[in-house]
Image (cartoon, rainbow, N blue to C red; front, side):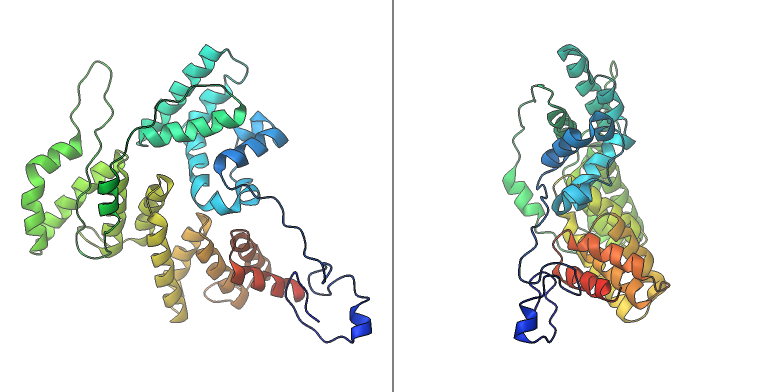
Length: 347
């Protein structure tokens, strides 16, 4: 007999099988598919559900823990937006005007967006974050018109490969201080220095590579998503800077939050660490896998669960193994789901 829910098979005579109403392994009816909980596909839907169930205090308090349960398919990426709201002071401006007038709400939105952009978050992304929260709160605040994007340039950037010094991204100007005109630092640097540095870097000039990396880094810190990807690649490959997986992950995750495919590079790092685990090089791999798993990426969560299950590089801990398997399973990872139920069978 095979359970339709956990897919475990066991031997049972036909007359006995018909009388079984509870699977001995997962506890569900083996002949009826358990109804799946409702998961929300977008951040806005998840935030609205949180507001409806728990109120504004929770919504604008600290709710990252709710997103993996309500919307596991988006938690790995969009929960980063939620994190930014709290850490960069946007939530406070919104919370203080929950019952304010429309004028107060509009003012609060401007303050929240400004707080995020001053923290080097791209303005378009800052507005997206803030308006998802105001939508969940039911605020009728007009959104600014969407800006056109250069699709052709974006397609070209997607062709980047994980080797050598990547093609430079167009930097974004730094925010202007009222009453004082400022020049875009990275743009000015690129305009005067980059071509010469690039040629020298291609020839293996270490100093030129370092200065070229500094140029990318300044642009990335100003919120340019393409520069963030480039900085991540530089840290991954050790181009112009010492190889650092943690910083590479940080910048790829920032780019992923802004809609660029940083996840693909993070998955590549995950594969690298998985190979190191197979080679029993745990000291290097486990901290990196843990950092990725904590950001919400399912492959790393499954691998970390396996490490705790087998005692690979960490003390064997079935409870922690189950916890990480479940997080990955909630994002649709079938292997993690199978291993989670296998642990449950073992009690």
